[in-house]
Length: 325
Ligand code: UDP
Image 1 (tube, rainbow, N blue to C red):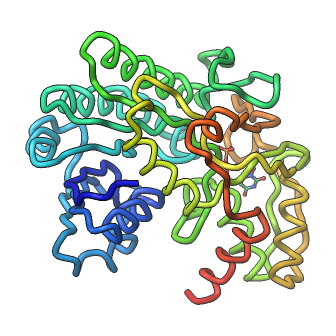
Image 2 (image 1 turned 90 degrees about the vertical axis):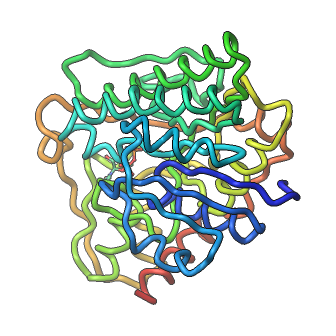
C-alpha cells in the first residue's frame, strides 16, 4: 500500500469505479486529479469529494492531448479508467467507443511515457471474447466473433490497448500494468448502460418485472468495488507488476436466472421474472458470451489477493444503497 502521499491522476474518475478509487486514494492522504468528460461519469458520483482540498476535478476529454499532458506533468502516477462503458454503449456507438478506447489510451500512454509515470490500464474480461475454456487465464487465447457484430469491437479495442501498453513497457521501459476487470458491482453503478445488477435491484425494489435477456443460463462472476479498488492501488504500487496482466474480480459464479431469484429474495420483492430475447434489446447482430469466470491464481499469488465480499454481502450493500436513495 502507498505510504507516502502521492499526486495521482485518474482518467474517468467521475465514473462508478473511478469515483470509488478517488475516494480511497484521498482517504490514504493522496492528492487526486480527475479527468472526466462526464459522458457516462457524473458529478453526483464525486459530489462528496469536491470539498476535499486534495481533490481536483478537470472536465476534459482524454482525446484532448493538451489537457492530458497538462495534468500528467503534475502527478506521480496514473490510473487509466476512461473508456466506453457498457454493452449498450458499445452497440449503439461503435465508432465512438472503438476510437475512444484506442486513441484515448494511446494519448495517456504517451503522456505517461513522456513524464516517466507508472500507469495502470484497466482492461476487461471482454477481451476473452467467445473463449469457452473456463476459467480464463491471463495467457489464454482471445476469441472474437465476426466484425459484423458490434459487441466484439469493445473487446478488440481493449485488447489493442493491452498490446499498446505492453509495447510501451517493452520498447520504452514504461511502468505499465494491466488489469482485466470482471463484472465489478457496487453502490453508484448505474443500470443505464445495461449493467445487470443495478437494473435487477431497481426492478425488484419497484416491483417491476425482472428482465432476463435470453434464457438466463448465461453466468457471470461479480466482484465487489471495495475489493477491486484495493487491488488496483496495490498493483500500481507493486514493483514487480509492470509488464504484467492480471485478472481481477471474483470467481464466485452465478447464472443470471439465479441472480434474479437471489435479488428477489434479498429485497423481499413481489416482482415476476420475464425473459426477453437478446435480439429484441440489442438488434439482430448480437452475440452474448455464455460463461465468464476468471482464474485468479496469478493475482492471489502475486498480492495475496482474496476478495472479502461474497456475492450475497455485495448485493446486500448495494440494496441498502438503493434503499437509502
Ligand atoms: N442482462 C439481463 N438483463 C438485463 C441486463 C443484462 O439478463 O436487464 C444479462 C446480459 O445479457 C448478460 C448478463 O446479464 O448476459 C451481464 O450483463 P452486463 O451488461 O451486466 O455485463 P456483461 O454482459 O458485460 O457481462
